[in-house]
Length: 152
Image (cartoon, rainbow, N blue to C red):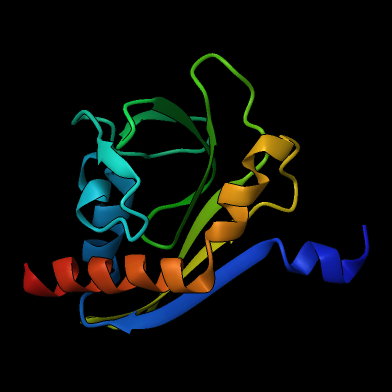
């Protein structure tokens, strides 16, 4: 795969949020909160009590279409970084990754970077949907996340 081809399979967006990193991270690391700010309108609900605390954990999310995803946590640093690979229940993840990185500016402002990386996605049936997950979609999630974090 050429470098150019790979880079087109990574979408990333960032923005400043007027809330502390701890507050913002809580909205991301608690799956029950994620449907509140999802800019893809893809997430329906997640059961409470699934707050992520470590690499290797798996949290379950119901999508708006009714299917369920098991999200395998592959990166985790409390208050700073979290990434997961979605999979159908009982299956290996097909290779796409959702990553969130938080960089505290001060106690009440945080730079948040959201990345969708499908460079390792192997299931070609998923390529069209992956391509549709553009920087604009990621910015929509960031905007909603900021609105929730800043209002509470």
